[in-house]
Structure formats: C-alpha cells, structure tokens
Length: 389
Image 1 (cartoon, one colour):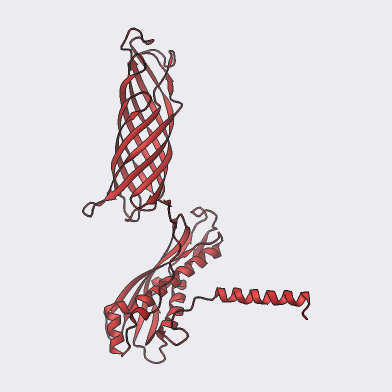
Image 2: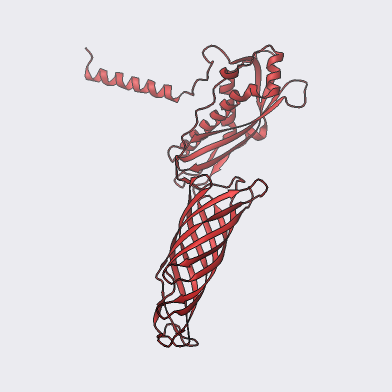
C-alpha cells in the first residue's frame, strides 16, 4: 500500500509528464508514417530574414509588457525546420530543391478577443541550375498573447511562426511550380490529404474595436452635418475634419445655428468651434458606433422680436460649453474610389447649456440667462481618405 507521501510524488510525476507533453509542438499529419512528400528539400534563410526582429517598448500597448526585442527571424527558421522535417524527406544527398526564407516580418495586432502576434514569411522554391524560383509563397500566422511578460510575447511569436510554417506545408502543392517538381520526381499530389493547416484562433463575436483601414494606416474623415436642437428648435449646419486611428477619432468642428426660441419667439444665432474626441466600436462590417465628449467655444446673439420679451434689441454672450454624444454611422466604399463614404446620425447632449446675455456693447454676463444649447439630433455625411500604410 502506498503512503500519502508516495501518492504525492506519483501525482507530481503525472502532472510533470502532462506539462511536458503540452509543451511539445503539435504533430503534423503524416509524422508517424514518414514525411508527407518523399521529396528531399533543403532549407535556407537569407541574412536579412534571419536578422528580422520585433522591438516592443514598454510605452506601447499593451502597456504592461516590458520592453523587449523578439528575434522573429530565428523563430521563423526554427518553425520551418520543424515543419519541413515532417512534411518533406530529409536531404541526405543532393536535394531536389531548396526552400528559401527570403523575408520575415512581425507585428502586434488587436481585436476584442485580445492581443495577438502576427508574422508574415516570404518563401521561394528554387532548384539547382535555374535562376528564377519555381514558386513563391507569402504565408502568415498568428498567436495569442497570453500574459504580460517578455517571455509571453516571444511565445506568441513562436506560435505565430509555427502557424505560418504549417500554412506553407499545406499550400505547397497548390503552386504550379511545386506541383511540377513533385510530378517530375514521381511524387503524387496529396489533394485533400495534404498536411493540415493550423487551427484558427478564436475571434470576438461582436463589438470588435474599429481597427486600421484596409490600407493599413490612419484615415482622415471630413464630414458635413445638419440637424436640429431638440429644446431650442434651432437649425444647425457645420463641418468637421479630423483623423481616425484604430478606435480613436479626433475631430475639429465649426458649426452655425439659428432659429426662434422661447415663448416670445426671440431670434437666437450661434457660432461654435471646438473639438471632439470619441471611441469607435465596430459591431459589424461597415457599421461603426461611437461615444465621446466635445468642447465648444460659443459666440451667441439673441434679438428680441416682440415687446413682451424681457430682452430689448440685441444681446450677446460667449463662453465654453461641453457636450457628450453618441454616433451611429455606415462606412462603405466603391471599387473605383480610394476612400470611403460615411453617413449616420448623432445625438448630442449639452453639459451646462445656459449662458448669460447682456446688451450688445456691454459686458457679457450683465443680463439674464438663457438656454443656448440642449439635446441635438444631427444627420452627418462625409468622406474619409486613407493616409497611407
């Protein structure tokens, strides 16, 4: 009969064995019965690809990661060596060709499922005595970033590199040049039995943070708006221009509004200029939802239109007014147009929407107060221009 101490050592041994097996790379199909393709291929890496690295600063997002440099070039070479050993025959003598790792890139990406490391590998198939490559591939892979340490970042890039190498093995025979080389050596194509691709990573089902434009960089939105203020019944028009990068939208605004207000139907005119900052979510392709805060410098004039009005003649006021707003818009493009069109609705609530008016020419604040802004509903249309990679 085993004692409690013996059972403890047995449990620890089982756990250690399980952890060791979990740390091993996934076995590619065909590993137990030999290589998927009995074709001897060598593996070579260009110096520039081997020297590739990803430098992460502690000031970048995700902010909790310490500064580190990940050698994505050596990780790519290691991944392709492991996968190639299972996918192709080992080149004991003269190889039939060589896979050349020509370029390696690494970067971080983000969606609502979390941060992920992504890599891009450019690979060429070359044969002796022929200058031009038989085939080229650009394969990509990604790995989830789990944790906040530098070792976690390297582990994510290692997983991404393995995924890219497995994509190469999966897509190898789909290239005409590679298929021709296999045929010339009497190696049959595997079709549906070729090496399996990597398992896809989990994706956020909804409310993905609005990411970069397809062009890969920020966008410059220019928008026109027209609407009504719900309490004061003012008709307003304006123009905004700004920059959107990932989930952040910053805009400068110029707006004018005018109309009759109050029970005395006094005429109120406003000129406003300021800025907005908002966070943008993308619940579906082509749909964006935003929420943010704005600040406006307001120059307002009210003019009495009846003898019963408490104001006489023209009164003026100026000051800063804040606001909070919600936006919903469609973003869509056209194949012949480089940018995208925007159209949507905005609801804005003024924060502290009263100002004190005095007689024109007198000191502002010397008279009575009046509400100059309240809930606003606006139609916004515009166009956004990609600013490059």
